Image (cartoon, rainbow, N blue to C red):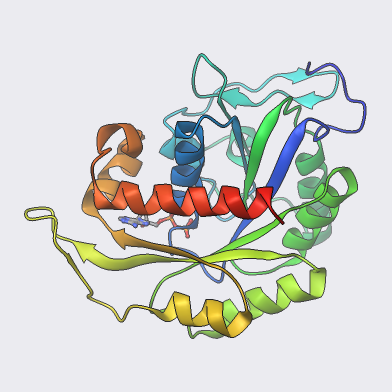
Length: 271
Ligand code: ADP
């Protein structure tokens, strides 16, 4: 299947979704990982393209380390996290000498051209959904990613991740402007770290204000996909590269992530 490049490497991919955030540290990569796991849990074949140049962290979150990546006639072969090949990952981190090093390709022009090429060069095969974890903010790299994806495939849209405190900042507004200018549909807004789940009694308290994500969705006419609490069990799972959804299937955090994944599926299947 990987050998057939007719129609490009995204020919057999049903939906392409970009994950954006105004700035780093709001949980973009965490939620990309968890949404991929939730979609897989729902029986979908999922791919993650990790082009977060600022810190490609998904290989660590999925516990795949730094495998040697191979090439076939149509490009890089993604790394599968399971024997059923239901979750495929290609990360810019795989191409770095040192996994802790952020990508320092010489010169912005070179960086933009390399990232564009990287986006087109993965032999995904059949996928229901491809999630693209982009760097924080909006930059020429985002444009390069989007343009190169669009050359091969319709991009369904973008999910914006924000925290309750970041909601009113300029970064998020720039994100929305970016989507409007590039004609990228905002599939929805997710408020992450929305309340804190006590590790002892599982009660969720709102340490920061809550509801900003929902307000922002209303303001921009976008769908509010839901909120995910700050859950220490999720932090540990992510740090240890464990599948949170399999480990804590009864937690409120899982049910929040699952519900976001279901709403996303409905939204991309009925544009
Ligand atoms: P970004 O990709 O936006 O830079 P990350 O996904 O790397 O952010 O998340 C930053 C840190 O916050 C990580 O250590 C991650 O484990 C933690 N984190 C993110 N979201 C949550 C959450 N909902 N609950 C607990 N920890 C979280």
